[in-house]
Length: 213
Ligand SMILES: C[S@@+](CC[C@H](N)C(=O)[O-])C[C@H]1O[C@@H](n2cnc3c(N)ncnc32)[C@H](O)[C@@H]1O
Image (tube, rainbow, N blue to C red):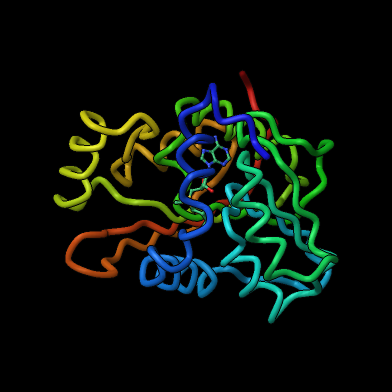
């Protein structure tokens, strides 16, 4: 079991894990479907899903990609336990944070992250870590709430006032500038709504230069 006593994200998701898939079924289906639609993989690509949660995206990936090439990382033991139940044992699941990835340098061809960036208090640190674990020319796909949509801005304000786990919802331009300054080139950007509440961004990047800190 995870030690819930210190980190609010861990405490929150340890509590939610058992009912997470059922409660957020529409949202998970929509966000992972949209992310997967923009993920172009070669059979040999090694793929890391950061903040993999209960493994919804990895489960979809297993249907189209060799399981031994797939890895997921999440800080919450209980979320990973739910993922483990639905995934092949060949998928490498690890407990860890985006800001301190438990992988050696240049291990992955593709990093993907779905609905995680708005939790990050230190997105620059996470992006430096993503840059480190990606091979040169590696690709990054990020899906998250998009602050260009008014409902997401309102949600951001509300969660900042009431939630202990919320970080920041970014507008598309802020998001792209942040990722580009971490050593990535933007390939393309899609902004779309999945219902009346959630407006999302899925952006694709390529790892370019050596990162300057
Ligand atoms: C909204 S859930 C999304 C889960 C999954 N990506 C999906 O699409 O179903 C957010 C996930 O991000 C994880 N998370 C939060 N902060 C994180 C961090 N700093 N590093 C890595 N994962 C984090 C949480 O534990 C949780 O599993």
